Image 1 (cartoon, helix red, strand yellow):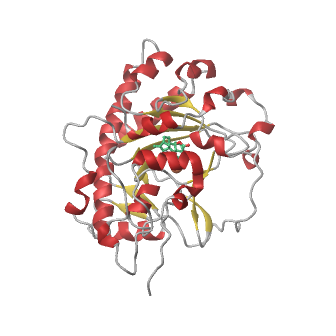
Image 2: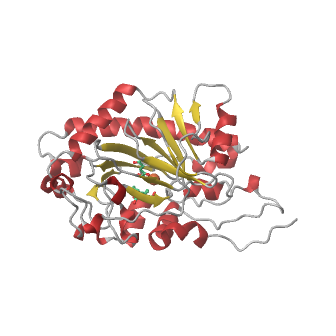
Image 3: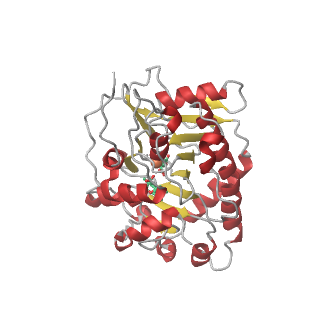
Length: 356
Ligand SMILES: C=C1C[C@]23C[C@H]1CC[C@H]2[C@@]12CCC[C@@](C)(C(=O)O1)[C@H]2[C@@H]3C(=O)O
Ligand SMILES: O=C(O)CCC(=O)C(=O)O
Ligand SMILES: [Fe+2]
């Protein structure tokens, strides 16, 4: 049986493997294919503005309240004291750098097929933009052994071991954070019984995605990862120590998410936006590149079991708060995203009249 992500990719194969990724190390300047015109719609960022993405210590007693606040105001927060050992994060970053530092022709041996989830390639959202991004990625769903033996026929054991151990740890943590978010919305365990993986189901509910943003000769003319929202319930991101991630806030414009050593970034995905009936908003975010440092990040996208329809929670709905979205499975939502990109949420919105 296939999982939701592979099912959606099968129905929406993208021919990104026809585009040969740029050999970033070999180009002295940003080629026309990768040149972006910076938008001037937003006010310039004010570094002295008081606004910044909230930081939540998972061991603090009022974590639930802080979570609700962060999810309503920002849709994103940084998490400290989360229990994932720093040594594992350091090893994860080391292995990720090792992979991306391979010569391009070697990485291309593990290229993602048009309908595949695992392997090397460009961001899937690249098809929605006229110019290419200054980044490359490697996705892993379940075991990476098959693709890694294409990369390193003999010595992939350590890489695979680290990726599998991190997936186990991050899955447990993500489920804890999910519980925290749902409780903070006032939902009980019974309200979300359906979210639990089916007994005996071995299908992964998460996808690990390694991002690499090589050093760029002219960052002002390039884009690391174009503005988007995540198609998950929630995403946990390890961004190591290089700046570049920004989230869009309605009042302030683009706000940088400053790296905090050992912290994880927790990001609301579109499915949580639906489940919360728009109380928690999935934030638009982007990544800028820089001239001197090679940025690495590792995202874990978590979604519901394949047969589960996500819809606005009954406990949040009444005549003043009608259900804003139609029920969708993860696959159906990924299909909508593949078709409508940043209009995907709007494409499943109910036409409702709000009572006063
Ligand atoms: C489970 C997911 C989440 C996906 C699609 C699918 C697998 C790959 C993920 C990413 C990873 C890179 C950014 C993004 C925007 C992209 O292009 O591919 C993500 C996208 C999404 O959040 O929509
Ligand atoms: O590299 C980052 O900080 C963000 C990556 C991201 O947004 C994604 O993979 O969806
Ligand atoms: Fe993202």
